Image 1 (cartoon, rainbow, N blue to C red):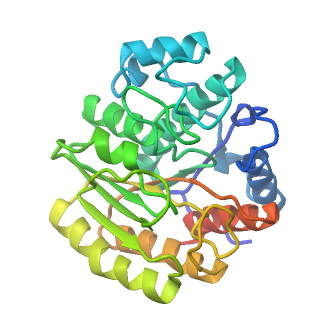
Image 2 (image 1 turned 45 degrees about the horizontal axis):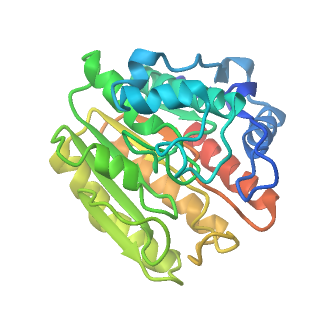
Amino acid sequence: MRAPPEHCVFIFHEGYYAYIGQHVLQAEKYQKTHTRLREAGLPESAFLAPRAAEPEELALVHTQEYLADLYSGVHTARTAPSELPISKQIVDASFLATGGTVLAAREALDRGRAINLTGGFHHAFADQAEGFCYVNDLAVAVRVLIREGAVERAAVIDCDLHQGNGTAAIFRREEAVFTFSIHQENIYPQKKRSDVDVGLYDLATEDEYLPHLEKHVPKMLDEHAPDLVMYQAGADPYAGDQLGTLKLSKEGLKRRDAYILEECRARGIPVAGTLGGGYALNPADTVDIHVQTAMSFWEI
């Protein structure tokens, strides 16, 4: 294996796993992705462990009332919209994942690229949970870096199967943050307006998908000129996913990742990645795609 590029690092913690019972969200996928990367011979120095996000960091995005519910670990009108159970372990894993995305963003600024081996909980709103998401780690990372003065402008490129409705709502009136989402249109969630939304028909393949990236991504990078890109690299546009009917192959998803990373590299824009969704009927396919994405960060 060639020497690692100085600009690549992976963020992982054993605490990313939380028991959620029988669920379409394959909670073991984060550990399995990490194990596969370690088995590939990546050096110890390529992996960093995060700390949990601090209360003041979470409060840059989420309301105090909602955070109080999370700290208490109880069902309320604000936590009930989640499709996950609620427990201290699950909430703690959310806070740790958010800290991982903050760390990935900081490391990306120093190294050029970094990826959190979880994260992308883009359905969480400022004042409530939604989907499988309690904390919007993407939004927290962006707000932390802006508050610190590390960046002035950021962009979220969301390539999950599902629209990043929470992220779109949080940044709707924030000119410093550009939101782009490409997703299957006729499924969950109820859509919120991103700066650019590409809603695909139900059986779209990479032949339809990739030209949309070519149309929008360079224009967005050139006109918005972000200091940092947060890349939500969902595995769920895959043809074998249980929650949608897009028909991208593993090779098509690899081409997606490569295109976005190369367009950012050509402009000298750092990229922080999150794994996002992935619910393949065969869980090994989800892990394959996440590993593939992580290796794209490593190799490109």
